[in-house]
Image (cartoon, rainbow over all chains, first blue to last red; front, top):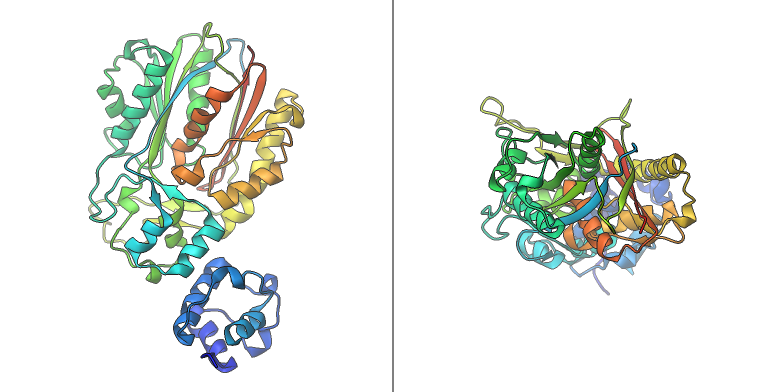
Length: 77
Length: 344
């Protein structure tokens, strides 16, 4: 099994390192409803996630994600 | 426009150094593959030219160097010499020095003297502003031939030792979007067969109640230690507003001229980045027009952009064809546009 990230760690990363004001209950919200979300945040988040899980991630694969929950699932797949 | 037809006799351009692709930037700044993928997806600009050495940060050319080269090429292509120029107008956001103005340094090098010269402090609408000022002066009948120049050199804002990973996004984008370059055009009255006529020029401040979308600061002895970022962009406002303003410019030009949208043969859209330019061109929906863009290769070089587009347009502009150019400046929000027609 490849290294992943727990839900709690993911929320901490979003809050503390990306600066998003979100909790676990917000992961399923569409990106359009997420204040402060943009492609720059996506990039910053993937760079940090890549370090956390210790394997390369591909940005194009994450462009289809509709919300943070999808990203969480893709990273743990 | 007035009764005296004003024509674009020639265009010249100058780019510093070799093209620098995104992989070279990523390597220089130690950015990983995700960053390159992000640039490719959200910016799309493939190469840019910089007046500095990317390794050492050493400045190799300044705006006067590039402006002189572009202007000399434009004069040569028009088949005229410096003494034929009756007025010079330069647009730039990044003059080499505040005084002397760069327009006069360039004029001096070209041996242009004894004529009025003007320098506009401008951004992406600057090239159109130079056309507006020059066309107004030519329309008085006091002058016959104008040299207009536009260019930018961002060396001052390009710190090759910067840690991009630690910079806020509104500063990082400056390292990706922009490039250096200069362009020039010779505008003239009189009979010049084959040279397109300037049918309309539009420049309008549209900044009421709008915060600036782009800020470039300058510092002196007393405030040189300022903590404020020398260059920053509100990229979200730019992404939201530029397409709206671009559409307004296109509508205003078409209304002013009574032109049908599907009778326009060439569209020169705003050149922010490949991705943004593509979206705007699609929104403007000139169904019969060929898009003339340069930003994928030149990067966003501000006041020079329109000249690079015109440099591509002029050789292929056919008789009885029409072109519309749109430029939006996000500093205090300026709408700008140009309509050209080749009548024969």
